[in-house]
Length: 403
Image (cartoon, rainbow, N blue to C red; front, top):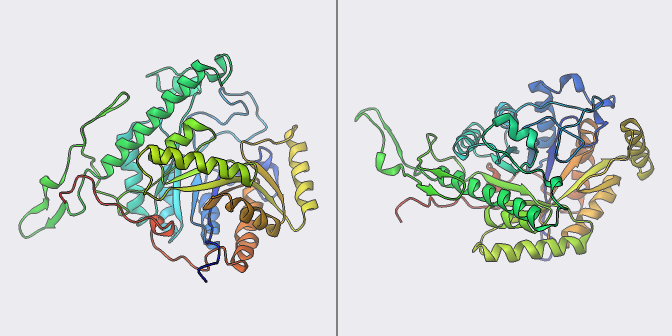
């Protein structure tokens, strides 16, 4: 590839139940009866690996899915219930070889100590292909599952842009940033050569190479060290979805990848500029931080077919489907055009959300990927064995190891 060729794009898919459209489970290809089996998730993720995708994210939450943003609903015509995303990833890890596995974790009600060892374990099980997607929650019904705290309902304030709502949002994302900081320090709390494992001398571990992290903050007080040795990648990937300034700041402070939802190339350019400014303010200007665009996709042989399928799904759902992300309906070639257009706004990759997993995921791997390969915008083979390697991220030094 010549030096003037555009950079290859990174591609991920976001897996959520039978797909992102709420009526997806009613499609003949959807397999709703298999949704809570290991085989269902293995099939989806091995299909994504067949397409040489960088990674998959797996959605999760701490309450039943809802059509309402801040409360449960009473609907019985949509998928409700989930398997645990980290456990799905751990089950599928031995059955895959190269694709990254990035389960969602909700920082608002989970302890960083638990998350750090769960993702470190996933990194071991997958031989260096683990990451996590950080999520926060403002749902009081989810807080009630834990009984340790209450969270304010955002729609209880005078508008989401009001000072009280913005302060509540800021507090929740500051907590998420501290959560990730604790997780990252715990991953480093064992030096890489802390385990000696010398049967002859009877020394398994060098205690001087385990470190207290002694984190004291507004939200957490964690001494450490972890119980799990440093993960194979040193630091598994941290990713987060962001729609506005406060979440952009979390991405800039703590993430390796931020997922954003641009409307067009100019909007992408503005979002990337804001994240880069926040990244510099956070003292991370020299670090690689990928910004991926999120798109919901309905892919067919023609735009008319894709639009007809969307109309059919909307009719079954009883209302038009809307999303925080742009919804694309069309062909693989048209989607490739759009991805190239958006990438010109500074995005280094994309996280695609299949509207119907059983239909649109194979369209991504078997139609879109070959189209991008023809344009020399996507890999022809996996070029690294770890997720950090696929994304061009070096293995970081341990912050506690003596220089």
